[in-house]
Amino acid sequence: LLLEIAPEQATQRLAGARAKLLAARAQCDLPRDTKVLAAWNGLLLSALAEAAAAFDEARYRETGDALAELMAQRLWDGERLARSPDGEGSAAVEDYVYLARALWDWGRYRNRNPDSALAVRLATQAWERFHGSGGWRGSDELGLPGQTEQPALADGPLPSPSALLIALSQEMAAAGRPAVSDEK
Image 1 (tube, one colour):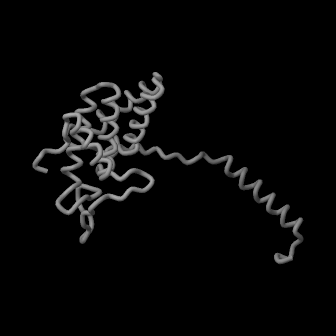
Image 2 (cartoon, rainbow, N blue to C red; image 1 turned 45 degrees about the vertical axis):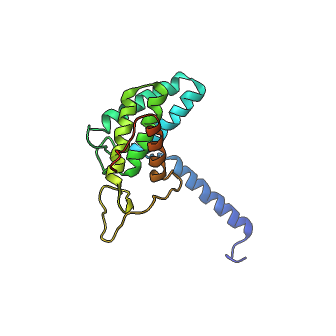
Image 3 (tube, one colour; image 1 turned 180 degrees about the vertical axis):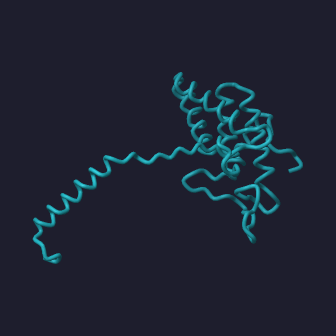
């Protein structure tokens, strides 16, 4: 009797508390993450390209076509990539790289030159914006004093943007569509 109540009484109190908590939770809406980010949608579009090629189902093609169009029209202004359609935040290296990979995958799957051409443009800009003589940086600007470029961008739950961009650039070059000039 550590709590100075009988075990049966403690069990009843816990059951009562649990019932109250479950009733309160039932009244709440589940939290939703409503962000629309270039990088995340790029990962989705690459997955749709793979699924569409593997299963040849209209739902994958239709969803992929709509997503590719949305990304190209709402996130790309002809010069720069936006991180999200609402214009919040500056696009980071993963936004450029994951979306370039996705549009390359989708353009190759659907045999659509505009998607492939935008992929090359995004990959080229990723090299120009995020790679320098000292290595890689995650954003256009090094935001903190003393912040330096890194030899490679680490991966974690998501693929490393630097490794993905290197592999994508090799694919593009093999297809006769290099993402970077010889001077780089």
